[in-house]
Length: 97
Image 1 (spheres, one colour):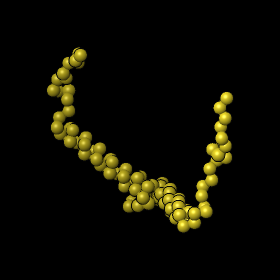
Image 2 (cartoon, helix red, strand yellow):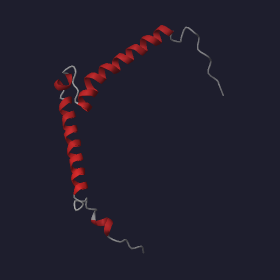
Image 3 (cartoon, rainbow, N blue to C red):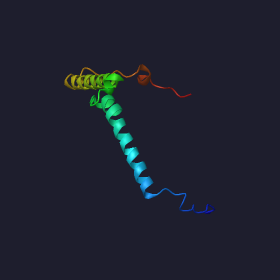
Image 4 (cartoon, rainbow, N blue to C red):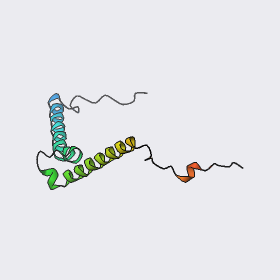
């Protein structure tokens, strides 16, 4: 069942190499968060790169659509005559032959 041999200790990364790799990955994730994710998702542009890449605009449009959706939901909750019509096919009875 276990046919693989254990690799020698010289092939495995050292603790220092693992810590350095972890630190590089953490820094990369932080840079991506600040430059890409925050401007695109939350319209928070700390560096100005989001405006340059037009990611902030994308986030603003997303927030406008969410606000319109909430306003429409609030309007439909106040006025019960506003409903989403169901498709006509869903209202027709089906016959089984």
